[in-house]
Length: 200
Image (cartoon, rainbow, N blue to C red; front, side):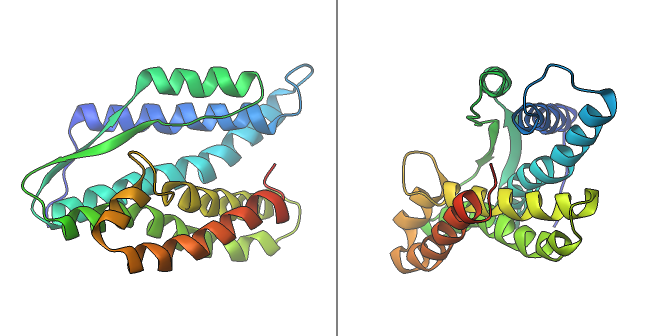
């Protein structure tokens, strides 16, 4: 399997990664007045290594599975929505639709379902990888673990919602039992991350 990235795709991935990291950093900082450079740098680094990685690997999972099925697949950023994400974070909420992986080539319902499923499954796998770091206390490593665990669980749950262009809708159209097996625990874990673990 030959995975290639065009210069346009790399630019779009980088722009989305940075923009989402900036937007989430703004949410993590309790008021922008009086913020120090070290605090801003630490917060951006935390967001870059958690939110950015969660987004990037989610999209790459879609791309890799699509290529595995013989398709041409590339990520395209939605720059208007990246702007909305940053502006929304500035007033206290985050709505992120940074872009998507678009693929060309004939697809079966099963192939489309598996391509869609790859993103949320990647986020669940990342949550498992971040989880042990959450036990490192309140330092930077512990913060990476806690936020990485939470954001990946929330992303998995959100993307599995069976609505519109979200991954869950495509998975459900392909195979309802597979959808239920992934969606139900993802939703439970996502709600725990939001309200039990205390993502915000």
